[in-house]
Image (cartoon, rainbow, N blue to C red; front, side, top):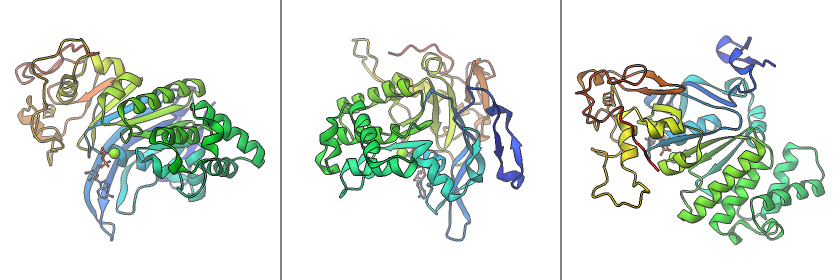
Length: 364
Ligand SMILES: Nc1ncnc2c1ncn2[C@@H]1O[C@H](COP(=O)(O)OP(=O)(O)O)[C@@H](O)[C@H]1O
Ligand code: SF4
Ligand SMILES: [Mg+2]
């Protein structure tokens, strides 16, 4: 099967995108996306994310990890086409199952959100209106997307509340404030999954929960993803969550993707100096307490104004780093953007690497 998409850059002419013809074609494809803060008059003030390329395939969980402020939520919000007026997509394209989001009307986008793309946010309270019972909200959502009776919608809602391991009838008849944080995030998972979306965007879904409750919500997300075969875009500042649960991952720094690949490949053979330091800064679960954990030098979030965004903190920095590095293939489906790397994974200059790059690192 092939899908014809309308690309707004071709002024409404339908173009066939061969990329979307295979069953493993991406559910979400982000190409060369740049988002900028703009003034009231539309003048670009500064670019918050630049040249983002990401894809999520059917049934796959893609993790996006990066420090606070690196641009993860801005990217996710652009996919949902919910950027505030002060932010604008200034370049690039977003496709959902081959459909160019920029080509859709507001009505079509609204239909897409909630039906084709569902989302879970850190602020789970915001997923529900506080003064309306959970059940009523779920039923209304179902009926706004599907032609079903109240009774049928109620059955679907109860089934999903049960599938996320909530006491279904009690949750259905509760106001949001009557559920705990973990229960409410489970209810928002039910709300996300019950429309059988092709993609769930989960932006820091467990950050506001205690560790154990957060782990359980993520385990549930993984189990139900396997059952429903939907794709998940899991965004987190917590490397452990991403390493533990995702199939592929991308590492973001200063608004750019600096490394991407199969999670196992990035875990065992990180290429970019930032990814290596990030992995080394994690405590190992070996039972042995290290004398000293590696810390990433410099101020968290310090981004170089030009060239490589990590240059202000990078122990392997060389003169060329004043120019922005491009992504280079490092292995199967694995790439990284750094001047001291050459395609295939060998550092250009062993001395410049300072012994940091291209190490085999084994983490639990
Ligand atoms: N509405 C906005 N106007 C201007 N800058 C913003 C806005 N929202 C976010 N930013 C900036 O964009 C950058 C990325 O933010 P964000 O995507 O929220 O980071 P993350 O989710 O990785 O923590 C930050 O520097 C943040 O201050
Ligand atoms: S070596 Fe240069 S390009 Fe590579 S991460 Fe360090 S500063 Fe960036
Ligand atoms: Mg965020």
